[in-house]
Length: 262
Length: 90
Ligand SMILES: Cc1ncc(C[n+]2csc(CCOP(=O)(O)OP(=O)(O)O)c2C)c(N)n1
Ligand code: SF4
Ligand code: SF4
Ligand SMILES: [Mg+2]
Image (cartoon, rainbow over all chains, first blue to last red; front, top):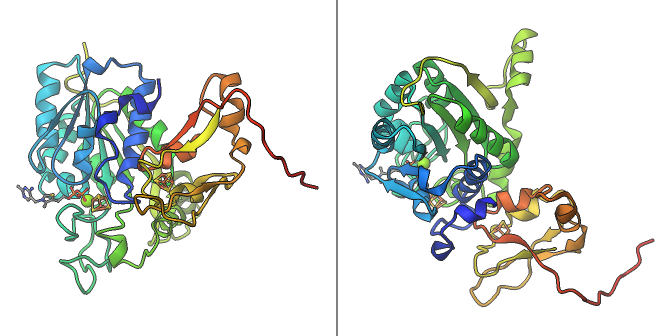
């Protein structure tokens, strides 16, 4: 089997814009799920609202496409009612960190046995490009027409501080690394959070000088700083470049978890 | 096996032209019936996965397939006997 066997072929091609990174992240997640040897009947995908949250609609298993921000709340219910199910959540930066922020931190605190994949395009894609809690400083959106002046959330740091058992970050360029990270997340009991930075050519790229889709992907590649390299910089007392973001496995631990398969 | 792009799915984003280590995908020139400029394949038989996936029994490389946001890239069975014009490179 390959990841393609998890897609509802009759639903493809999907509605994402040309060059949208969401499709890449779904591929990588399904490739990891495929390697787990899970039965389709025992696997559930849950999402909220947003372009990213449309993902479960293209997958053959049972799924819940819930209200905005509540994916993790619904997923918690599914997992606590039947711990035998494998529950994977697809979410976006707005869905997870804006309207759903409280569900996110409390699911990390409770350390519920879910795997959450966040497609962070740093914008509200579906509603036309409003700034989100992860829009970087200086970036343009319809609500920050002169450049964003707020500090963004670091979603991974948030998950670590709140107590998640597994946390990692990659981008839509790092497909193999992302696939492996999702697999470790699926294997780890407790809350696993994987952030995938993605390009949104329509709402973000167009306003932020990424004329070609590949330019944005190249930006993501060039501004990724491997965790090991970051740690070496800190050890040597050197400055960590502030226009870069850390990628790699950021947390892996064994705090007490809830809803783990008996 | 041979690399192929499903024209009914490709949206012409050209990400595959960026990620293939052999640069097999080249930007297309003409729009197809749906108005999409699908990339062209430059000697796809050079792809490791085309040559070796059956021998190894698993996908090798496969970065283009994972990257393609539109699930348009696949390896399909080759016709059993197909004449190919081969240009000799010195
Ligand atoms: C309760 C509620 N408030 C607001 C909205 C409008 N809304 C729909 S999608 C969205 C933002 C989605 O952003 P994100 O989660 O980042 O997804 P993306 O489209 O970027 O993938 C908003 C605000 C809604 N559907 N429901
Ligand atoms: S608006 Fe952005 S996130 Fe939504 S489908 Fe288009 S490119 Fe993807
Ligand atoms: S990555 Fe996929 S959708 Fe984009 S041009 Fe290549 S085959 Fe087409
Ligand atoms: Mg978003």
